[in-house]
Image (spheres, protein in one colour):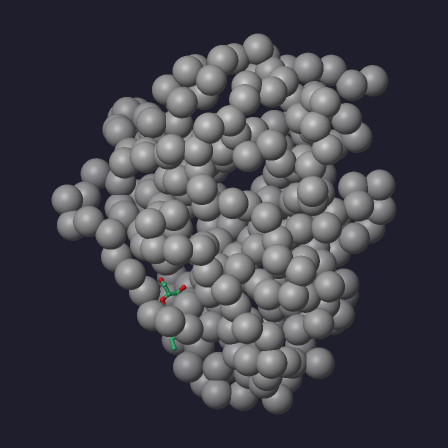
Amino acid sequence: FPYIVPYSNITFNDIENFYTKILVTKKNQTKILRTSFASNISFENVPYIYINDMWHPVGVISAQRTAILIPLQGRDFNAKTFIFNIHAFARRQLLTYTILLIEQVHPLGHRFNKGRLFNAGVRYIQNQESLNITCLILHDVDLIPENDGNFYTCEPIHPKHTTIRVQQVGSKRGYTRYYEFLIGGVLLLTMDLYKKVNGFSNLYWGWGGEDDDLSLRFIQRRICVVRPSDGLAIYAALPHPRGQRNNARFNLLTWSTVRLDTDGFAQIDPMIRFVEIQKRSTVTHIKLDVNANE
Ligand code: BGN
């Protein structure tokens, strides 16, 4: 039966306090740092209720039913900070939402395959029909949105890329801007759009390129990506050690569009095995073997 967790009792000020401080926990260290939180968007302090694996604002009907998908391998220290901050952010925007941690736990020591994790996460959502998700948010675990005007809503015919400017927490170098083509970091899109491009390629092992591959898929299907304005699309990046690079990424990208229909979401099932699904009110933690039957 539905129950309300302590979050629903906290006030606007509490949430804002949480938000202006980012907890960085790396191994045994815990630091509290301030971000450049600069919201001028007003909102009400609406209580939230957890029903059938989704968080709902009480007395409000959200326009969309949103799933926030976070692929990861290890990096628990980032995940905790992320979850803590993203709940408050989603509630200030009155979203009806669920958060899925999609973790690669097997094979052990194998390089990260973010594409497979996203494809698996979307398959899980599709199989849970009662969730009835209309908006997918593909989110890096180390990025915290800093402006409430950066709306986490899906556009009907355009994917939305929201990580335009990113600032390392604790760094004095200011915001970094990436290249026009980039869609990595945070991407919002409908289930229909995800299927239209056959999701992500399953072939990228290690850091880099899988997002550029998805970008090429959109171009091939003549789908334009939109972005919020510069001032709104700002993020704080949490510190973490570097992942192993994928040296095959340039070759893979060369032939990306040729593989669109035969390498992606439609082909994911035999490659994955759900090792464990842990449901908590704060997060559904899906643990995966991403190299099954290979
Ligand atoms: C790029 C990576 C992206 C990554 C961004 C931001 C590649 C492919 C080279 C053609 N792309 O360089 O995957 O999201 O940096 O860090 O490595």
